[in-house]
Amino acid sequence: MEKNNRFKIFIAAYLVLIKDGQILLSKRANTGYQDGNFGLVSGHFDGAETAKQCIAREAKEEVGITIKPDNLKVVHVMHRYRPEREYIDIYLESSVWDKKLKNMEPHKCEGIEWFPIEELPDNTIPEIKLALDNIKKKSFYGEIGW
Image (cartoon, rainbow, N blue to C red; front, side):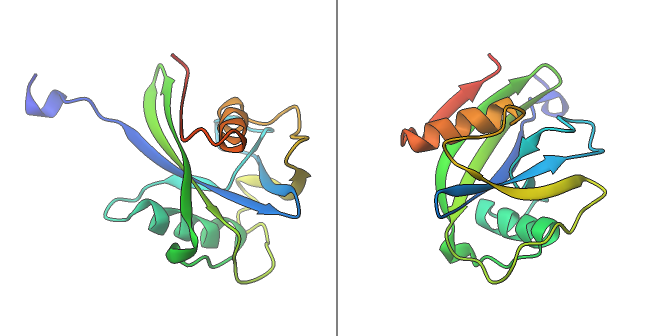
């Protein structure tokens, strides 16, 4: 295979915030992917950043909080296949953040809301639901879409 034709994979980071048995979910809007469904604060790597740096940046951009990379730990990795793209998703958890959460991207998010971790909304994005189930089971690796 020629150098320019090498396989490319996308990498995304996801923030797992749990407080008092509840998890923070955001309702997607105007993104072209899973709009109207609940997911996590997340985003693609910009390059030249670690997974912890990526999700700390996304947390600031999406919900206005500062999370120190040292307060993040990887709790799950998922290999996700979609016909148009293949992903490695890294889920990071923190129990420490600096201030009240606020929807900073209303053009891409209808709102943020806490839900009981045991009662996720029916319209939770399937790969998010699977990842959260795997995290509860302490399963570090998962796959979806194959």
